[in-house]
Length: 356
Image (cartoon, rainbow, N blue to C red):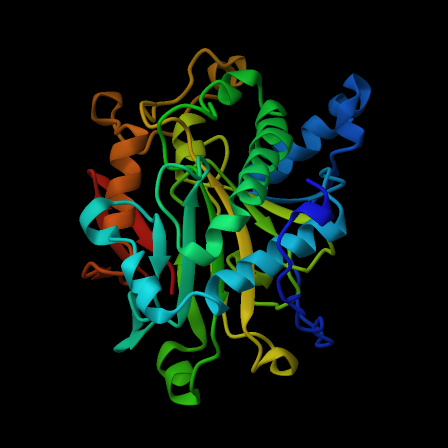
């Protein structure tokens, strides 16, 4: 879509990158340009496999969109929050607890974080099919661009990442099939020092994503951390016009534990970035709603390596049941405290942990 044909909106100026010395996770950086040849794919495949097994996160570059296209998406993301009135946001507010769907706005102070502190996070969630639900009037001129953003993530990022791990996974992520694969804009607002103390600087406690593959468009405010295999939280480094990819519950279930659903959290940014809002753009991909989340035993890898089941095959939920259960409960249910300080709950008979 040419720049001359799109509506003009204010430009979002991102925060400067932090200059603090942080302990970063060492993520494998995968060049998708290299993946366009059979030889390149053969070189990259073991690196993707090992990274997704050992850490659960990878970084991507040369994904096919320019910096200008990326900047435009962040302009639209910011506009979603700054140019829609509070009254209209409430009109398009999602009913997560009632419907098990994220579609629409999630307004701040919906989730409980810790010690009576509610979240300071605002979201706008859109189905990959932007015609499924009506949008605020201010957002409607951008729907063609958002549709292209969704298709780019789906076909040029998620499908290539899945195909590193055999096409049988790709066949479960059909663009036209019923499901809740979503584009999401997120804005984290700074909090009071009192709230930071009560939550030990945690903005979103450690968790796994519920779906298959999450695509995060890298932005400069440091706040995302990964729980490394050695049990230590490490920061995720900003990569200009890069993507950060992680696996969720559905991928772990379908791979019989071969690929990890990665534990991650969001905390207060370093000192030199405090006072800035943290704006994010994401694509949360999920298998088709009808997919039963059982290990794909026709995979030669799983036949060789074996599986680590989280539940008996006869108890396996479908993707629609799993997402509705996770979304309805997240940030709203009373969690059971564990001896190690973390928390847990059961959803559809599956133990789900929350990491403090």
